[in-house]
Image 1: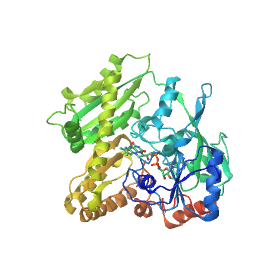
Image 2: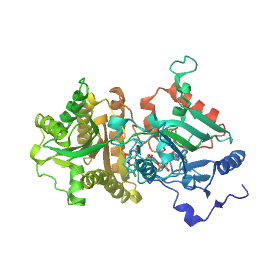
Image 3: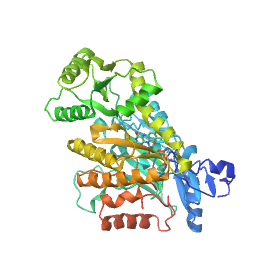
Image 4: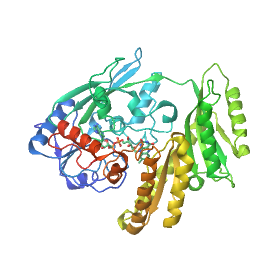
Length: 463
Ligand SMILES: Cc1cc2nc3c(=O)[nH]c(=O)nc-3n(C[C@H](O)[C@H](O)[C@H](O)COP(=O)(O)OP(=O)(O)OC[C@H]3O[C@@H](n4cnc5c(N)ncnc54)[C@H](O)[C@@H]3O)c2cc1C
């Protein structure tokens, strides 16, 4: 550790005690390794003294997973080099500390496309997005980060470096399934198993063209029916409509957009669906747009108000509006943190055919509990709307959490998950029991303890 600075200045440290969830943490030092060798040295030293290590990316976590519980904060920001872009085999290798949007832009400028697109891509690191298995609006077509991670370099708490690669074999009966693909053990492990120091990810051909659209509806129910119709369309042998993103805004989400931008929201709209559709040079923009307009014509959309974003400026504007909603809520929630309140957001998802049922269920629970209506927005095409409640104080927060607990139980009974993209961190640990039986949770803990025998890696996360 001779050449590695341990930053202990209290003013600097304080700025690292919390991530975007505002979950309060504390730590004794901040360390910024510049190389794999630095990470090995830091981890060995910490392990020998049983000092906890919380690895951080850009701390955009919404679950407290990057808020440290004592010990050292391992900041990956100085390890930000893309070391290879392979055009022939379509992959790139990078260190973790590069901003995800910079990584994506670099490969895009070279004619390739990295599909994972969390809305926070300008606020999160490549490594953080892997450690949380981040996803985004285009997950509807492309799947989440996990699907693209081909190989990882991970430093375990003992200082041992593991190089794991997604198997390419077509048959294998040896090993419990979660261990057959060692890459997947680390994707989404929220810093609890080791430090990801390098990752190889698969790239795809750049989509030739796409356009975006905003379709408005007179009720939330009409918007949900539209989503189910899109999913039904995809089951056809030659579907006409193949969006890459299908995102919801409820009327509260639309109000945020209306107040924070000059975008025109029709008076009678109570919900909207934002979509993106790719197309190649074999079809014309007019042709594919006609198909969409005719499809929308069969739904109960407010078709005269549909907004189509054909050029880059308009497309970026729609994506900016999409990001505006979580950003606004993030700031709104922060205003009440000192009074014991804040933003309570859900990350559950259900199979799409259960979406009406769960939304009605959650709505009735909120009515019964007399809590303020949530803002609902997000990845509805994947059955994954985010509910966002703003609690003004601790008693409101307690009531809201009670409703969220009941909703999560129901979600699991419908075949859903309590955490579809943000992970568990420290804030959602109480929900874990709804999803997995105790022996399976114990098996996950045992895996952690065998890879991290001293339990120093991101203590407090997940378990
Ligand atoms: C406004 C807003 C919008 C968001 N939208 C989305 C969205 O659309 N989709 C989505 O999935 N998430 C979203 N998020 C959440 C967040 O951006 C993601 O979870 C992101 O992937 C976290 O990356 P990060 O670099 O900020 O990691 P951090 O927040 O710093 O860390 C997150 C976790 O990863 C671990 N970690 C980080 N780097 C490493 C590493 N190199 N090795 C091992 N462990 C590591 C940390 O220990 C921690 O457990 C949003 C957040 C905000 C504030």
